[in-house]
Length: 288
Length: 146
Image (cartoon, rainbow over all chains, first blue to last red; front, side):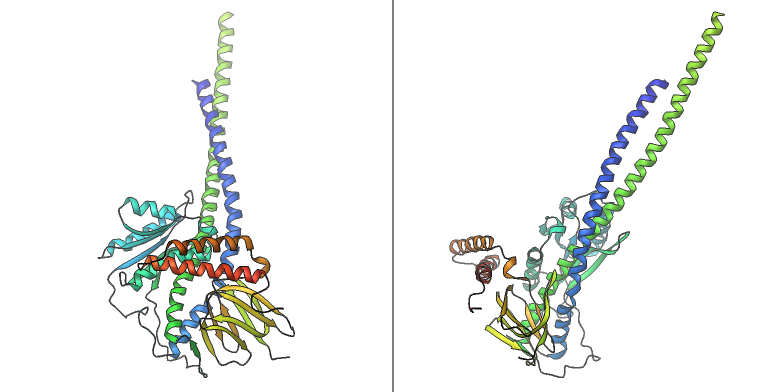
C-alpha cells in the first residue's frame, strides 16, 4: 500500500509543479503586457476632453442644434448594447462580471435587445444563448488602432441614424487599480447634455464651418468612437491585470498544494520505513 | 516676425504636436485655409490633407499628413484629428499599395445602391485621398516648395 501511494503522490507533485511553472510564466507575461497596456491607456484618455468641451461649447452658444443625438428627442424603445470582453480566458472573473451585468439589464428590456460584441468571450456567450448579435469584433484588444474603433462604432451610428435603435448602452470594465477592476455601464447615445445657465455664452462670436449643426453632427459620432476606443483600451488593461491576479493566485495555490503533497509524501515514506524496520525486527526475532 | 500662437495637435492616441506657431495651414472642407494669431474664433471641420505649420521664428514650414477632424480657433489653436503623421513616419510603399487597392475597389464598385455600399464607396475614396496625401507629404508636400 505504502509503495504505490508514494508513487502516486510523487506523480501528482510532478504534475502540479508543471502547472505551477506554466501559471508562473503566464503571470510574468501578463505583468509585462499589463505594463505596456497601461502606458497606452494613460496616453489615450488624456486629450479626450477637447472633444467633449467642443460639444458643450457649440451646444451652449447655438440655438439651432439638431436634436437627433440629444436625450429626450425621441421615446426610447429599442436599445443596442455594446459589450466589451476579452478574447482569451484564464483571467478570473473578468468576463463573467461584465457578462452578468450586461445580461441582467438585457433581460429586463421589454424590447428585443440588439448586441454588439467586442471580444470572443462575450460573442460566444451571447451567440450560444440566441441573442441578436448585430456585429462582432474579435481582434486582440491591446493592438486596437483608432481606425478599428471606427469599424465598431460605424454600424451603431448607422442604426441610430436610421431610427432602428434609440439608445446605445456600453458595458466595459473600468480600471480602478491593478488589484481592482469594476464592470461599468455607460450610456453612449443619446447624448445627455443640459443647457447650463451657469456657463455664460462666449464673449466672442465663433465662426462654424460648414455650419454649427454640421460640426455638432460630426462631433457626437466622434465622441461615440472615442468612448468606444477608450473603453477597449481600458478593458485591455483590466484584462491583463485580472489575468495577472488570477495567475498569481493559481501559482500560490499550486505552491500550497506542492507543500501539502510533499508533507504527505514524507509521511508515507516514513511510514514505509517504519513498517520495513518492524518487519526486519520481527523477522530477526522469529529466527532467534 | 509675425505674432505667434500656441498650437496643440491631438490624435486619439497621442499628443502629436505642441508648440508656438506663426502660421498654420489646414485643409478644411472648403479648401486650404491659413490661420494666424488673433484670428476670429472659429471651429471648422477638416478633410484629409496636408497640414503646414510655420514655427515661431522659423522661415520654413513643417508638413504633416492628417486625416479628418476639426480645428478649434480661440486664444489657443487646437487641432483634433483621427491620425497624423510626419513625413519621416510614413511608409511610402504601404501608402502606395493601399492607394492602389482603394482605386481598384472604386473601379469594381461603380453604382452604389445605398447604405453599406455607399459607405464602402466613400471609404474607398477617403483611402485614395489618404494615400495621395501620404505619398505627397513623404515627398515634402505637394503644393509648396520649401
